[in-house]
Length: 196
Length: 148
Image 1 (tube, rainbow over the protein chains, first blue to last red):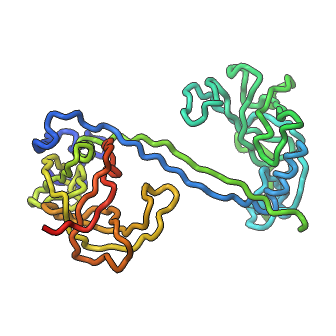
Image 2 (cartoon, chains in turn blue, orange):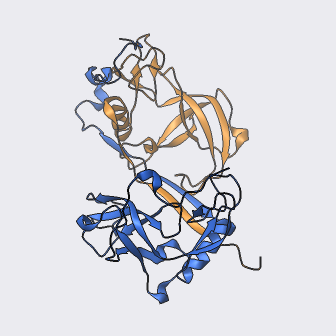
Image 3 (cartoon, rainbow over the protein chains, first blue to last red):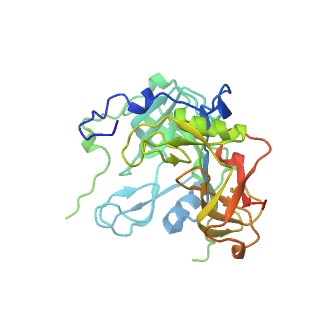
């Protein structure tokens, strides 16, 4: 039974209906059903100028972004280039540690490799005040059901004596209690820049 | 630019567990039991390691057969010292080995002292791991076939 192009790709795979025959050497023994194939890649990461400035700022509880000189867009975390204009960004531009939830997801299933994340938890795309792009974080210190598109949040930082040059200094984002930001249209989110 | 360049370790890790399906599952079962299985294709040739479908005509396959525990190196390259995550404590050669009774080669390690001890056409045999779990690494590697 050979493959033909007219075969429906959603149909039951033919291999499932093939009768498997095995030699006596493994007849009667319990069959292997699964195999562990972990993948681990170890890098030494060198962050570059823009991200190094951002990480040094993190130690002082400052969020240091960069601005595209052509479009005016503010990128955080800064990568040193504007993905829109294709040129180097300028900085640092200090942003406040406040913003609003642009998008979010409630996770109710645990992840084995992240035992510190106890479900249900809220991962959100936070748009910092003054930024043009969102920023990934957890919304904490509230019930998941209380998070909405437009919920105003503020960063919750690690205690001062535990601060490092790391984005993990921000433990999460907690609702400020301010009125929600009205998000009329997904296309208008953020401070957009225009190329000439 | 007086500040030091920042550097940090970054580890990317995926703890995959893969379901094997009937054919690969039978192959791995064989390895755990210390035997090697191939699968018979519609033209009668034997593919080892086996696949669920024939790479030539895409026909589903299911007739598993025993193949030998020794074979012939059809191609090789010198790997040198193992990397951190490779399950070897010595230099290895990487070789494509066609086991006796099979018509396609499998990739595995060959334990020899240096590239001068490797040759296309040389005979090698399996060195099994003592504790086997149903994994390709149940074959620790291949060693030159003992004469006689």
